[in-house]
Length: 341
Image (cartoon, rainbow, N blue to C red; front, side, top):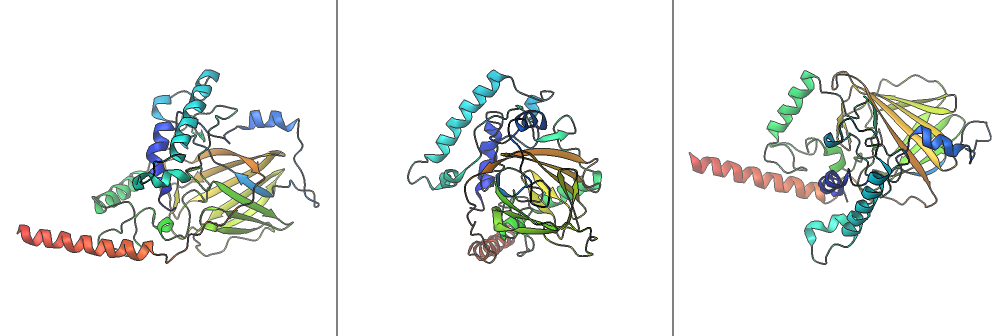
């Protein structure tokens, strides 16, 4: 299942405008529903955020360039996009027998409904719905990685590299962190669920993707001087909004459209808008990577279904096979160079 997102990328690019998600909604429309349903509270008086939450949507994180300047869709555009999204999903779930190259499409679970707010991107700031420009140093690093990995498959290690150098998606390949689990959580092709648990002094975020659990204190303790795969998180209440600050990432973490660096300061906000809607907002502040911070909103729908284990584990058969294939490719390249002399 690890490779489905990347196969999905091409499909999502073609239908991103054609279906903008089951869960995408903004505070305005969701707040209107709040008048009809009351968000529950815990026995200690805080908003009850617990449960399984579904954040699937094919609304792109960034606004497509062909929709530049268009923040929302008309009712007719939305209806057309929903229809085309349903057709695309049916195609994914009815792959012809024996079509091995497309078998991953069966698992796609991107959603079909256009948001109530009909937004064209999850990013709400900057207003253009796009991730800000990279800094000059980040551009140089990106170009250097691209040059070093030129001609390599997506999950292959950089030439001469081992499990610590499986490319930008290395943590995903090794089943350490999932591409849509983050943090921050960004909708993708499948496994778009997480479960939230609460006590008076802790919250736990359990992601379906790679089944990672973040145990986050609420008691005001300082951050650790320790780098962790998913960063070091601390939570606090800001009115009825749960705010989580995360720093000290051990390695760049993979999002749906790129990486966050180890210098990222991530702020996540969770607001229960009504009984069935949780608004998730995150702000990425990383001046070593981007020229300014950026913010996205991902409204999530309450799921009545349990969350099942995603059986991805480090040391599975894929990693030895990937490394064995890399060594054979490098030997063949060296042999070809010698023959050309």
